[in-house]
Amino acid sequence: MAAPERPSFARREGTFEREPARRVFAGELRETRIHFREGDDEKSPTYVLLPTGERCNRVFLIGTLTEKKKQGEQNMFYRARVVDPTGTFFIMAGSYQPEAMQQIARIEPPAFVAVAGKPNVYETPDGATLISVRCESVTPVEKDTRDRWVLDCALSTLDRIDNMGTTKYGERARQEYHSDPAVFRKMVFEALSQLSL
Amino acid sequence: MDYSSISERISLKVSAKGHQADRTKIEAKLRRLMEEFGVPPQEAERTVLNELARDLSIPDLLPGTAGTAGEERQLRQLTSGDWATIEAKVVSLSSSPSAAISQTGILADPTGAMRFVVWAKANAPRLSAGSWYRFESVVVDEYKGTPNLKIHSGTTIKEISRETPLIPEMTPLAELTPGIGSVRGKFIQEWEVSHDRMLQSGLLGDESGTVKFVIWKEEGKERLNPGTVYSVYYALVDEYQGRISLNITTATIVPEEGDIPVSGGEGEFAGALVHIAPGSGLIKRCPVEGCNRVLSRQNYCPVHEIQPGFLYDLRIKGWLDNGKETREILVQREVTEQLTGISINDAKELAENNPLGMDEVFLRMRERILGRYFTCRGREIDQRILVSACAFQHFEAGEIPTLLNRAGGAF
Image (cartoon, rainbow over all chains, first blue to last red):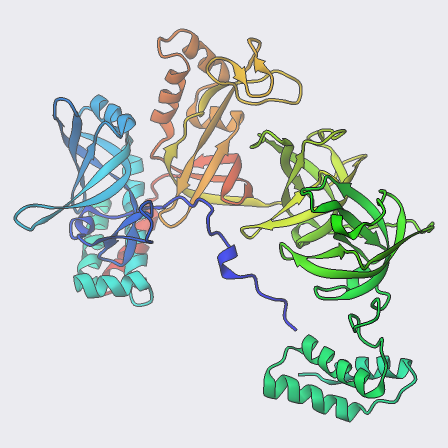
């Protein structure tokens, strides 16, 4: 007789598992508007659904910080724009992200920056959706690292596109966004073409 | 399904009692139970044996048949639900966790070992560690997923004399299963204790793998020395959330001469460093021999209190992330120096001559490594890598064509 199988819940349930930081081009994140909570608990993590079919609680991106703006008096916070080969990320850091805020304060644009943070979807009163990244850290990096990220992000994005037909979130992305994989392949192609120039 | 081995076992038992059993009939019954009714093999065997015992009036064919003390068995053969008579040695006693229990510990015979419990209501004589006893009519049930012997008011206990030395079989660490186990392992890592009542915790390693162990504070318990090889006899093997750990508080622990090879558990992971945790950079360690704990800002060691004679060290704690998975990395001094280009002496100087003190070292290190790509190698435990080698990963233009082909394949 075969050895009894371990119950599947015994594997990792209850142990802390850090959410991976997804690699997403600005061109894809801009199209993201579905967000949801996984689990019933108030503390269950929230995710956005990437159009290429992956849930995403954290992102890691590298681009050029082109503009930063300090806002608010009592609750001061920074907004900034970070540009990659496919578009613009909107990032922000407030008093709950003191480390990131201090980092942004010291950066003189333009500069290559590596950003780790959480994506948030907002709805404007006129019904449009905006997505911005609440930063955990914003670190100046070299061009070499930025180029490494473009390759990394291209690879991750292509992997997601190729798996769209086989995963739960791929299926959901198809239904919610009517995503056309060709559009995102083209985006990746163009991002890579800029590197080789 | 193979019915012949079961039917053979049954017919042997029957013939041992001087009766004849028809094997084709036995097989037919087994087949009917298992195929038509989906009865598991063990249960089917039991059912058939029971039926035969009744038909042939053999009272003690089955363990647990009413009116008997259960046949004499060896520990390895016992499973949950059995009634049995055993002869075994008390190899360890632990403090009783509840008033309903008068004694608890581990029994062993040459075939194996098992936890036992003596109920307070059993009115049993006190067992002493190291003695052999004959237990008539004990019950086996399951406690936390492992077999456990219950000594109850119906159990007869007799001390017996046995000279047989027990030599428990050593189990490779990777093959431990919940219950009792004996292992030989090297104390490869000491961890900070997470509880007041904990004396020591850390990691044992052998060629097959590593396992976490814990020793709880009890009278006469001593701490183990990191780097030493130990033989640990009759440890409690627990499973929690799918992970095996050893409680060696009541185990017999013998330090061994020499060294043993410790398994790889060696892993490699590549990704971006997305977070550097507090406690990275320049740190102070407790100077007390064998302690080495990290001191707080006030030079306070959780065990040895204020230690003005601290020792400086460098390390990085952080998270590597490849977009799909993450690993916590723990980088020791040498590799930290090499990655950040800041030596321990540079770091001390920075800390001493700067208004931000040790924070300045943290900030400078963060500037150089956060957000960069690395390949790290080292011993991997759970999701954590103790980094022994680490290198920056750079942009490779050679990767572009393959990616372009993949992206362009659709147009």
